[in-house]
Amino acid sequence: MLPAFRIINKLRCLLFSLLYSRFFGSFGKNSSVLAPAGIEGIGRIHISDNVYISNGTLLAAMPYTDADICELRIGRHTNIGRNNHIYATSSICIEPHVLTANNVYISDNTHGYENIDVAIKDQPIQQRKQVVIGAGAWLGQNVCVLGASVGKGSVIGANSVVLHDVPDYCVAVGTPARVIRRYNTHAGKWVHADHQDNQAAEK
Image 1 (tube, one colour):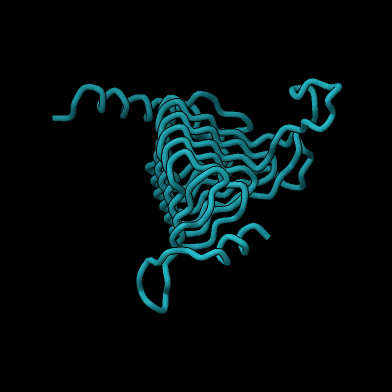
Image 2: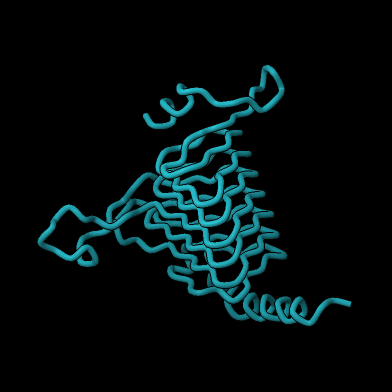
């Protein structure tokens, strides 16, 4: 017999799907959104099949930078942890089978701060690069991804801030995140990263 809290969560997800799924750009089969903190630009958000989004998460796709496109896409079999904040002003694509821990922040934009005579909250939002979180990637607790992409099968360690693209099959940690391990396809094993790995990512 399922514990009471699991039954309640299932009922919450079912109620959300019945009430709101038709308003999304698309909403896949067997997908669940549990008690979101907010959803902005719901018609620009696309959720594939078998996606689970835990409670307290904010999903947004708002065209504040007048980019040519504005969309948030979450691929099939992806699990989003509690209290994630995913905010697109152009394009964020989370590919299939991605796992995020709690309190993850993913954004393709940032606030301007250059004019010291104007409060930062009153300065324009600046568009950064479009974001892709590659298939099978894992973002640890409290990770921030700001206008950069994470390669497929890569791991971002807890509390890291990703400012530059992380290649496929790498482990990156720190602020800013730097690659410390990568998968060597010729050797068929994980190896320590070298200086060139990070130089390439920062270009």
